[in-house]
Each structure stands twice: as structure tokens, then as C-alpha cells.
Length: 435
Image (cartoon, rainbow, N blue to C red; front, side, top):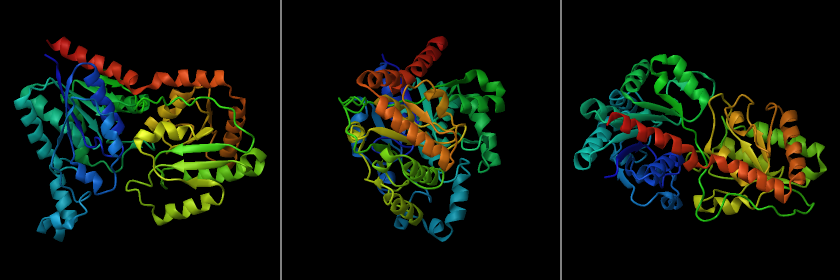
């Protein structure tokens, strides 16, 4: 009989939000390895109410994976006040604090009980061999903790982000409460393995919790093929009318390097006749909800005057075809020593030249350093970003069919199934070692 994995993921298909691709990838990787997989996740309505749904994601979930929607109530995500209790409506901040006491995580603490009940119900009907919570939110770790302490089922914590560590600064998270600081080692003590998406985040936690360092390992993100169409972009000769640089991803202001991107692009066009005939196309959702703030709308208007144009979101099923409209890619990411993104690996898989716009200290560099098509910026100054754009334009002109194929082959190593296979093998060995 196949082993049974209980995976807890706040976001799962068709939710269009942070972490969903890793959650789907984990479910698929275990399913492909012959495991039976049950997913505990939030109701679809939580995401559809926010306009954060992409129904094409449903087709990326392997057949046989069981998805169980666990009731969820939060003052942070519930925008329909007709569903609020009287106490929640009268004093929403006090209500959120009180309910968050059940688990020290703002906006998600009240989900703990519902998750625990669902986990035990699944285990009662179809015994679970292993639990895996992929977080954030960190309440996703609770089903594994509860089943481990009450029934002995082995558990894995998967950090796609961090809880008490700020991945943007490399310092302790100032928003982490003292109760969170107490809960994190409690959960780690109960876990059999602890996964992280990159080495900097793993190493930070190993220094903070050396007693659990031997349980920690890096299980990196990767890219996902979409349907039958490869992400690799075939080489075609381009005319001299100009280049199209493309960006696919969430577009916002704040952590996203909007101003360095635009100011560097303007400076590059001042210096390069080719780039004065070129443009940048931005594709993706505007922030978490898809609706531009006033600040973001103003940025997009300024950008459009410089041939940096927003052309709307892209359904997951259409990503491959959209990449074929571009000559080069813009990897604009928030900066920070713990920051990586699945977009890094997806970009690499296309084989297109990539201009990388983020602080050099980013965790992206160790993954992309050997790429034959990657041009990082030395800093986020307009001069350095401009220089990176100009060098990427030169690289685009030098690419041939052979060098494009080389870049595609190099990027293929980051396919998500390959990346996660070591983690699945380690989980299998964990159970075999206990039998």
C-alpha cells in the first residue's frame, strides 16, 4: 500500500498568491513518487473574494491528489462584514488579538483549531504516514505538530519563507512576537526534518537553533513546465528595429525595485541608440489584489512615457507563449540576503538573456552565477542598472541558436521536480529508517 502524505498549505490551486507553486510542486512530487497525497488548504472563496484566483492552475495538480478545504475566518482576509460576529465588528483589533492567542500569528491564529480537527479527521479515515506543512503562514505547521505529539506521525516543516527571520534584512524579524519566538523551537523540536528554500535562510536558522541543525536541509524551488509547451524559447533572428524586454511577475511598489528599474532604464536609453528603439513590457498582477494603488498607478503612467508598458496579467497556462514575445528578460526582485523566487528558475529555463535588478547580496546569485545568459547589476544605482541593460542588449545581439540552446540546457537543471526529488527521497528514507 502506498504511503499517505498530509500536506498543509494555506494557498493551493486555484489560488494565485505567494507560495502556491511550491505547494502544488510538493504535492505533485510526492504523488509522482507513488505517495497518496491529501492537502489541507483554505477555502477558494478566501482568494476569489480578493481577486486572487487563476483557474488554469487547477490543471497543474496531479490526478489523485485530494484537496480538503478547511473553514477559515480572519479579520484580515474577511472583507464581507455580514459574516462577522458582533464582537468582531465592534472591536476588530481586540477580536484579532484574542483569536490570535490560539496561535501567535496575526490574521491566522484562529485557523489552528479547524486545521487540527481536519488533520485528525483525515488520519482517522485514512491513516497518515507523514505530515508536511509549507509556510507561511506558520500555522501550516500545526497539523504536523498535533499529529506528531498525539499519534507519533513523523513531520516535516517546510519554510518557503521565514517566521522570526527577516529575509529582506538578514536580521531578526521585528514583527515576531515573544510567543512566536517560543513556538518556533517547540515546533522544530517535534519535527523530523526542516526544509528551507535556500542556504542563507537555512544557515541563519542553524545558527539560531544549533540543537536542530542536523534536521535542516535546503530543498530549493524550481520552475514548472506549463502543459505540453516547453519554457525554452527557440532562437529566431530579430530585426534591428529594437528589443522587447519582458517582465512576468507581481508588480507593486515598496520592496519591488520600481524606481531603480525605471531610472536605470531611462539612463540606458540616454546612452544606447538601440535601447531608445526598444521597450520593456510588464506582465503580471498589480499587488496582492490586482488593483493598483495610487502610487503604483502613478509609477505605471511615468513608465509608459518611457516605453515601459503594462500589458496585464498572464494566466499560468499562457506563460510559455508570452515568453516567446520577448527578446530578453528583466528579473526585478526585492533585495535581501534571504530572497529567491521561483521566477528566477523559470527565467533561466527560457534561455533568454536576463538583466537582474536587485541588490548583489541577494540569494539569487549563487543559483545564477554560472548562467551563460545572466547579467547582474552591480548596484541599484541608475548608472549600474543602465550598464546592465546595455550589456544585456549586447548579449542579446551575440546570442545564436547554439548559445540559446546551451542556456536552455543549463536552465533545465532547475525544473521543480528535480529540485524536490531529493526532498522526497529524504522523506522516504526517514520513514524507512523508522520501520
